Length: 197
Image 1 (cartoon, rainbow, N blue to C red):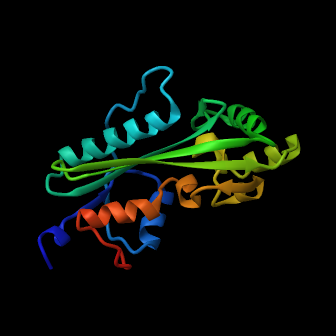
Image 2 (cartoon, rainbow, N blue to C red; image 1 turned 45 degrees about the horizontal axis):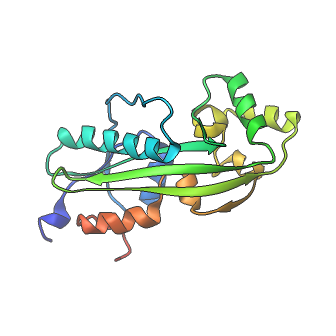
């Protein structure tokens, strides 16, 4: 095994969904969560926001783990150019879901992979169409507790999957990590899953 293939791989995210996606794709990794300041400039477009935050997270963790390959990511939901983050309470979750009801929104996931010497970043964009949602449906979904830690107040891989009419783009990106493109970039850094690319 070469030195390049023996490097430590770190996921700079606390998201259990991102860890699950990487694990299911056959990657071995450690998790170290970034403590960097993640505040954004006002009026920043959604695609630039996720790219910037993914870089901040990856570079912050890489700085303290020299020689490692670090993957940072960020996901936002955008409707009509407005970023919908994680709801701060159930009332905000209700308003977000009511706003998304019957409409098509965009999910942007930014990924940065770095080892300090080399950095590769990209953004994945997926369009998601929701069914029209009754207030009863929204309340019953909020009662599951699932919306509270998710951008746009829903998780496509869980109970929220029943709200989605269809998607145009990458399902895994909506979950939080575009694994198809990430795996190809990781292979350039000598980090391989179970499938040779």
